[in-house]
Image (cartoon, rainbow, N blue to C red):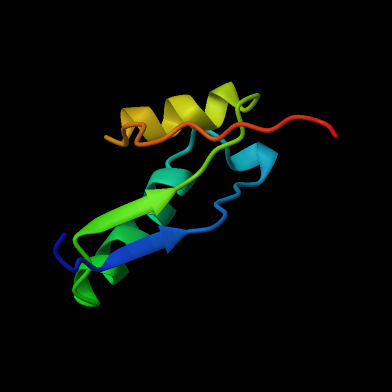
Length: 74
């Protein structure tokens, strides 16, 4: 393994009235630029399984799945 530096996007939210206006893309671009400026090679984020709209947004922005998290009730 080799050391790599990652930027992590914890949450990205856009007001309902601003959805599909380019605000989300502008925020994502700003996070990406900050990550590059910090020497990061990758941008990581997560999306809830039920949030199909967010998943589609990230996939359209070039994100690909890298793991699949699972849970179950105890």
